[in-house]
Amino acid sequence: MLSVSPSSGNLATPVTGLNVMSEHKLRKMMEYNNYLKHQLDHQRIPTSQASHMLIKYVTTTRDYLVPSVWGTSNTTDLFAAKGAGCECNIM
Image (cartoon, rainbow, N blue to C red; front, side, top):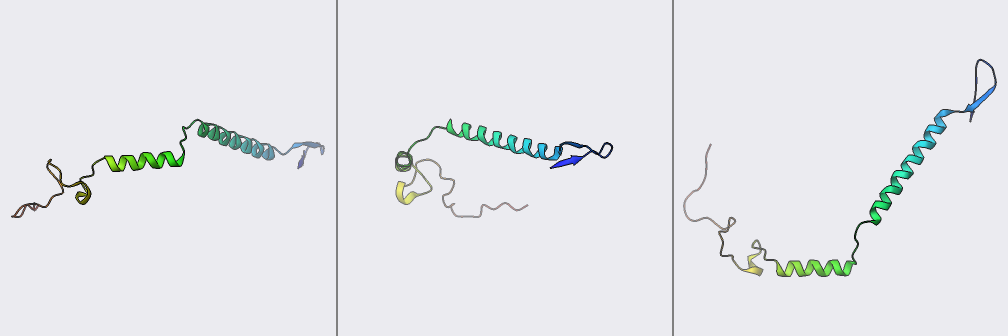
């Protein structure tokens, strides 16, 4: 699209708004390209290996919130039922 200069009536350079849009599109494409290059640098492992690592962690790490599987712990259990008596705080 060309604009006409009102003073001389001659055809001028292309409208600057199109140049701004083209520069904006180019900048967005460059940012996205840099993002994709950054993603390539991340370490990748196969899904089967990640699944194996997860299964190994879950089966070897004790979870005291599941006593039916791991039994009770010897440490003080903050989630255990309290003894007799009221331990309420009233403000």
